[in-house]
View 1 (spheres, rainbow, N blue to C red):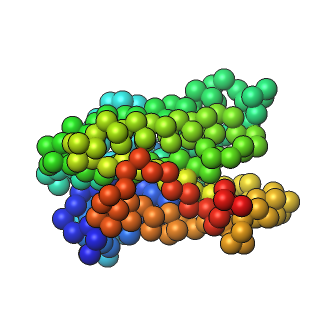
View 2 (view 1 turned 120 degrees about the vertical axis):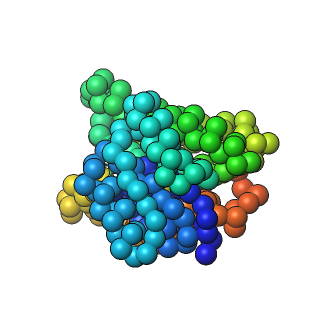
Length: 249
Ligand SMILES: NC(=O)c1ccc[n+]([C@@H]2O[C@H](COP(=O)([O-])OP(=O)(O)OC[C@H]3O[C@@H](n4cnc5c(N)ncnc54)[C@H](O)[C@@H]3O)[C@@H](O)[C@H]2O)c1
């Protein structure tokens, strides 16, 4: 097992990539703290882990609120004694270009997608330092790598996540903390459900993917597992597209 004895926090663990990653981390031996503001989703993921013989707790939290993030890091340490891994993955998407995006949507997207990742790092790092190191994995997006239509705030937030990840990697490498980010391409989860239900948009998003299929939650979970484990022991500050070749084409 790749994560035997490790304690991992997964934000956005109630759905999509976060749920798949929580289940995979637990299968690989990690004790998982499932965080989501959708309490029912988080509870279900933790329940499924326990039913499969793993160990998990869930915490309802909004990652854009500093006190919530501090609380779930404290809960992880209280439940399992330490913290080794955090997957800062919770995120939201509201379409809009620079002319039309509402300012309140801009603020909410930046607060969840970027400020939330900052808080995750800020409160996880001191706990990781106590054990001589740890692993941070952040979910950015292909929207951080290429011009992405109708996503001004989302693209900006995810570009920020890429830069933040590099900054954390250089600041804390000597503390034994690795930080990397995953840039998923268009994938079939709740966040894309409405867009991909529209046949015209579905075809538009599928056309530029060389592998000819959308991403699935397990595609991201496997990349997260690689980055969380010692298989990636000499990788830090990296931005890893998991997108079927979309941003390489
Ligand atoms: N699906 C895609 O095509 C795609 C592509 C690139 C990047 N992403 C990113 O992947 C990440 C996961 O998204 P997903 O595709 O699994 O979508 P999803 O909607 O299935 O899961 C996101 C989860 O995050 C939770 N969440 C949202 N805001 C939160 C908050 N403030 N506090 C706590 N939890 C919150 C939601 O309740 C949900 O359970 C997001 O950061 C998203 O931007 C998704």
